[in-house]
Image (cartoon, rainbow, N blue to C red; front, side, top):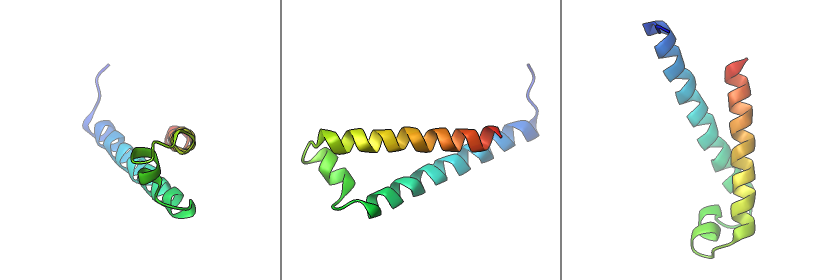
Amino acid sequence: MVTTLPVFLSTLLYAGVGIVVFVVGFIILDLLTPGKLWDEIEKKQNVAVANFAGAVAIGLAIIVAAAIHG
């Protein structure tokens, strides 16, 4: 399968937008939860918070993928 330049550039654009939406979603999640999310996971080894953040990451990834796919 041969890809053309416009298809490649649009793929890069969608990937960039998806990453930005993903990062903004995690920033919003961190603002909505009490305390600092990364400190709870890394320093305090809070497995429940890590599971919650992982579930949110999967949910955001599904939403971004569905929006890109159409």
